[in-house]
Length: 146
Image 1: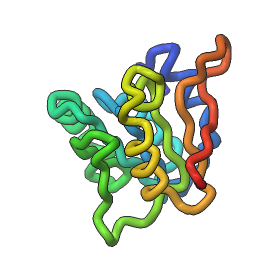
Image 2: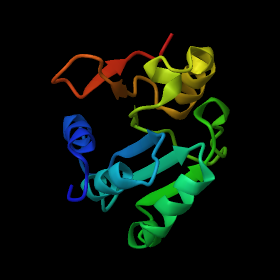
Image 3: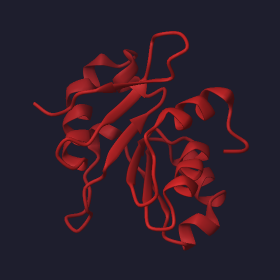
């Protein structure tokens, strides 16, 4: 997990990752955490990073060539509240969102739509992790099944 900020390293380290998992990272930015996760779930896992910023997704793609070519990593430019996976996309085993306004209280008007889209992308019972507001705890699991 080299080249990660301490905050991202703590978040990635807190995820229950193992080889073969399919992981959805929401708000992937430049892709640093997605690349670290892809290395931990490979060679049979997969990470999809999504972000609303075209610039961020472009940077993520440009910095991730080998992992993309290996089929471990993919990036898509879309807001989480508009995320629709192609019909042939298998569900994800877990999802994570770090500093995403729909989930951290900055954009509460987007929360319901964003949770609906995450729920649709996860396998039944798949965990979803967001930033924790508690000091010393990098992530908290939130329930998206209703």
